[in-house]
Amino acid sequence: MEEKNSSQAAVRRISRRLLPFLLLMYILAFLDRANLGFAKNAFQVDTGLSDSIFAFGAGIFFIGYSIFEIPSNLILHRVGARRWMCRIMVSWGIVSSLMMFVHDTTTFYLFRFLLGVMEAGFFPGVIYYLTYWYPSKMRARSIGLFYFGIPMALIIGGPLSGWLLELDGYSGMKGWQWMFLVEGLLAVIVGVWAFWYLDDKPAKAKWLTAEQKESLLEILQKEESIKHSHGPGTLWKALSDPKILYLCALYFLIQLTFYGVVYYLPSQVATIAGQEVGFFVGLLTTIPWLCALIAAFLVSRYSDKTGERKKIASMALIFSCLGIAAFALSLSPVISMVGLCFAAAGIISVQPVFWTLPTNYLTGTAAAGGIAFINSLGTLGGFVAPNAKTWVEIETGSPAAGMFVLGISALAAAVLVLFSGKIGLKGKISGP
Image (cartoon, rainbow, N blue to C red):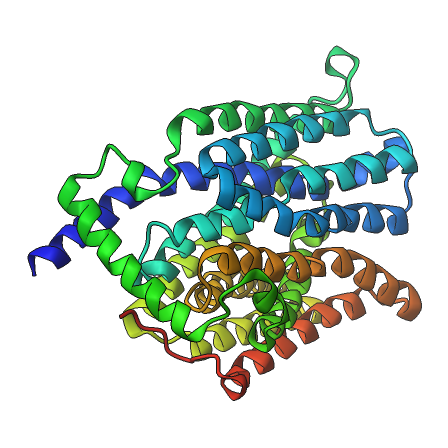
């Protein structure tokens, strides 16, 4: 009982110390990759870029991101999170700021690709980093709190980006130039802070007592030994493991739906409101993401409490599918807005539950590379989403058709989750 109390005290202290800072990092990371959606209309007018060029440039971020995911996570495994997270944040913040100099197709593609290269490894690095600190029974909750970064980035980023866009003409700069400059520099500042704030592993954390370290490490070591006995023991085995490839396909569908919603939600809300994207529309976009924040908190806690992963994940995806369909049908502005709320809540809340599957299966170098591999292939959905949506809309002449593609992707992901037990992925997760 004393050992259990010590480990629980350690987890509480870890949550107070690490999660708020990791959350801040993720807010800035997501803001710098998604703020393009807020700048879309003014950015295209000033640069003369077409919808198809914008869609390809929005998606090319994920090509650079995917190529360097695995090398980045292996470096983090070797040198530690403190140094590597600092490097990632500072470099992506600089490139994000350089987006203010985009003036044609070539510079747009170049800077978006480089932004993906520089940010590569951040998200899977944090997921892998959390396995150092949290036992499996508490992992969905911790990842769920980390996932607050997405809705919070869009809750904070909506009004912030809208306000910066309204600085158009100030000091001779466009509003979207101010947006890229300011939001990029914020990432640089926090990246430098990360070097001094983060600890690589619990054993190095001076803010944990000796008893807390001992009890926590004992639980984590037991879990690692179990994973060693049934999971792939090396990086190369992990990359060819059928379970990991299945998870890659599942995560690809989740991300295809997710980024289809994220990139176009500001312009969709503007259409519902009958206004241009600015501060007011930015405020309206916070509504779906507030719903997503609440859903991420409740769903991840319920998943940890019950140990149920598969059924909860599939239900979240089905809710997202129904929300997208409700928006696409455009029955009324209220129904469309409610649909966006369901879509955002479902596609955000499913992701912390999803990540419990690979983190409970992989360990060591296989975990570092395997998690990055899943994320790198999965996030290619972020490249496919805007291009597929735009292509379908052009071919059919219907904006609703593009949204239905996203809904079908969510539904297909729900089916994959339900059948995941057929290849040995557990529907319930428990610790040792």
